[in-house]
Every structure is written in structure tokens, then in C-alpha cells.
Length: 196
Image 1 (cartoon, helix red, strand yellow):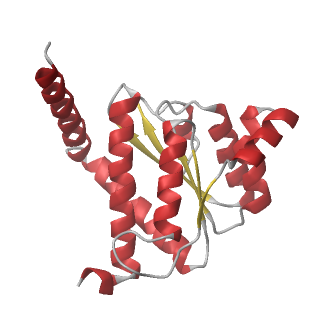
Image 2 (cartoon, rainbow, N blue to C red; image 1 turned 90 degrees about the vertical axis):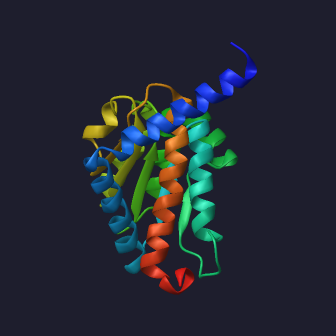
Image 3 (tube, rainbow, N blue to C red; image 1 turned 90 degrees about the horizontal axis):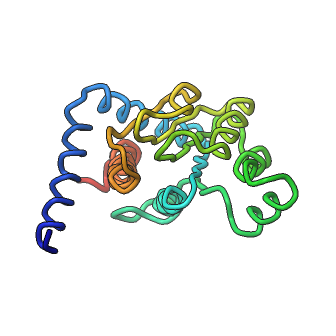
């Protein structure tokens, strides 16, 4: 296979993944519910806490900075934090174990009325599962961006959103689209003047 074919095949596969997600109305309803949870959280003065591993951690950081910085136009910052800064992660990994890096931080920072968002392509990352359980004990609503069959997390969270793909790259490509779109939809609700 030549390089041009590799590019075409990859982009076609990405398009097919997005179309498969888009054509399931349950997915769109879940995305609308995601928007509503974030709008409710921010209207009540809450914060969003996001976590994941590897590329999903990078997506969590990207998600958080879009809230505390800006997306397209100026607006006030909204509270969001990607769990897992390096000093905390190495401390907790060393003292308690890697499976507690997110839950331990969330227990210190999270409050009833905040929103927890876990990102996992497999849905089986133990440290994210532990954070979901901590979030529920705190009284937070929980969302997970998942892939494959949703793994263990799909039955643990209030709102699972599952990308119908089997490889992490395709799943993460749709996750970033979901992240950008939920930000736009929340901004349109909270800052309609930015879209006139």
C-alpha cells in the first residue's frame, strides 16, 4: 500500500466512525444530556473534573484548558481541572498505588454539585473507575467518554457516551470532536452573545 492509499484509507475510516456515531440517535441524545449536565453544573457554580490515561489524559487537559482559557471568543473562565498533575501523580503512585492517582485528588477537591468526566478508550482503567466511585460518594454526577463496548465504566456512570470503534486512535479522534462540540453547545447556552 502506498502512502497516498494509507492517507485515504485512514481518513475514510475516521469518516465512517463519525458517521456511525452520528447515525445512532441514542448517541445524539447522550451528547445533549452531556451539554445539559455541564450547563447545570456551571449555572450552579460547580466545576468539572476530568481524567484519563495517556492520550485520554491529554484530551482531559485539552478539555480543561478550553474552559479556563477560552474556546472561540472572549468570555469569563469556567472551572475545570484535569486531574493528575505530575507532583500529585508521583506522590500518590509511590505512596498508595497508581490506581488511586485520580480518586485521591478528586476526594480532596471535588464537591457535591461538581461534574466528573472520565475518558477511557477501553472503559476499564482502574484509576478512572476508582475516581468514578469517589465522585459518586461525593455526590457528583458522572460522565464517561468511552469506546469499544464501553467496558466496566458504562454501567458505573450516570451518562456513558460510547464511540463505536475498536482502536484507540479512531476512538480518540471522535472524543476530541465530542469535547469541542460540547464546549460549543454549552457556550451557546451560557454565552449566546458569542455566537451572534
